[in-house]
Each structure stands twice: as C-alpha cells, then as structure tokens.
Amino acid sequence: MNHKDMIIGSRVTGGTAERFETGDWRSLTPVVDMDSCIDCMTCWIYCPDDCILVDGGKMAGIKLTHCKGCGICASVCPKDAIAMKED
Image (cartoon, rainbow, N blue to C red; front, side):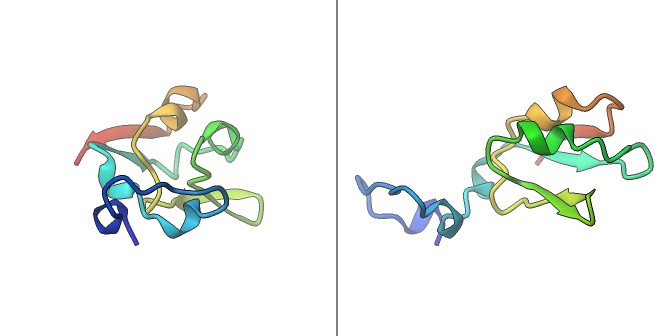
C-alpha cells in the first residue's frame, strides 16, 4: 500500500510504517558512489526513515521504497559518496 491507496483523512498508526511505500513522494533520489563509500555507516545513523541497507556491516544501498529524498544521508557523508539527483 502507498499513500495513493490511503483513504483521505485516514491515519498511519504506530508500527505500520513498513506497510506504506512513501518513496514516490520524493523529488530527489540519493545515488551512492560505492567506490567512494568507506562504510562508516554515518548515513545509517542519521537516516530518519531507516532506508540505508546494510549487509555484513557494510552499506549495501538505499531502500528507495521508503526514502523520501530528504538528503540527510548526503549531507552527513564524510566522503561525499552520496549525491542527490532529481527524479
């Protein structure tokens, strides 16, 4: 279910955020340069939507189904390995 399927005036209740794919709300998309990424996980710490994918303690990508394009990950990356691109 995404926001377009929600009834007008309905509410997202606690613990249900995973059911709502909010990624299509964004106008900017984070793009990761994996060659520049040092797996410091700063992006994972700061992402308000838990969109940073981790595999074996390393950054594995971004869960775009929930990423709203806020750009926090890009702004905190010490190596500028994440850029925000227009959709």
